[in-house]
Length: 428
Image 1 (cartoon, one colour):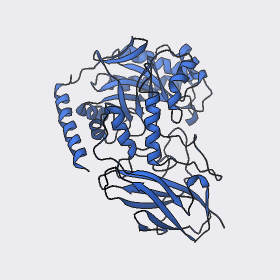
Image 2 (cartoon, one colour):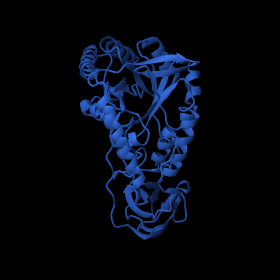
Image 3 (cartoon, helix red, strand yellow):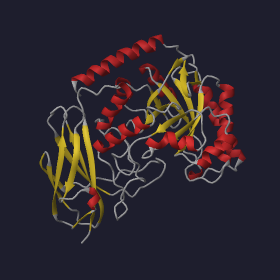
Image 4 (cartoon, one colour):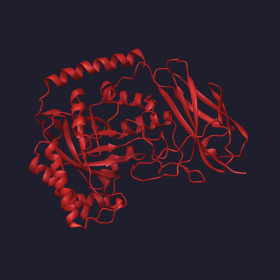
């Protein structure tokens, strides 16, 4: 880790210690929404609070050091630990309350199951409602994804009413997949107890303010997931593999889409970028701002700039492109089994740090889920990639026909990384 980042982390730790000492330990801090000058403002303890947040519970010290102020969760799992750590760092938490999803088999016509769910949530709210790090409650996650029963919204409103009854200090929302007229209409009629809506949008983030207004929603909202172009939104290869942006392409769209929407819409109270950590979803690099080893991509640099107006002193490598057999990803690359091919990297470093590269070959993932459900990472195929130079490697195509991806990681020696992958298909 570079000296400048270490210094930032040290300063953040000292500030967090001061905050934790002065915090209202064990007392809830009230949040509310007020209408001001044609827009809305979130007040926390009577002071304006714009959410500069991230989804996830990893690397929270870095989140604080780089200008973030809040995290969101998807459930109350490890809730006490999460809230205590957030409090220690001077962060807040939008705490998720897990709700049954119809696509997972939950039946909102089952009155007994719905009542049991409500009682479970009641216990969770009672347990954490007075924690000073708590900012808001999030009821369920993408309950509108692949559903048919509108009774889910009756259940959401019942939870919201319950929360307001036992916790008058915190806001209540529900997280929606995308922005759809049908769901907004349901929420307006069936969920009057919600204080605001939360939307989760990827490629279409820049048009969120316009889309929300077009539905007739004129109240406040937050964006609880946003990030790169989603795997369902971008190009696909002829064999059905989603094409992933490089980390540098992601950095550009994170910045432009945020500035076009979240940063300027007076109805938006802030957001939670996805994902402050790493996960396998289509690939090991698609949604995480970090690698499995905790290295930071160019997107982390962008988030520090968006949150603070300042770029980090040492920045991540920039990846212009990577080609395999003289072809780029959208050339839809077919290789012959057992033959050797050259991969070439075009990368640079803003700080002129010495770059190193590493390669990994994976079969195309077949454990494909929806809505962020857990996926298994494919097992790497060893021995078929040899690095000839920092900007070049040789790939021997697997002998078995099928779909694969060649992954590239370009590191600067300061815990920063650029990532890319090229899907290809082996056929005779």
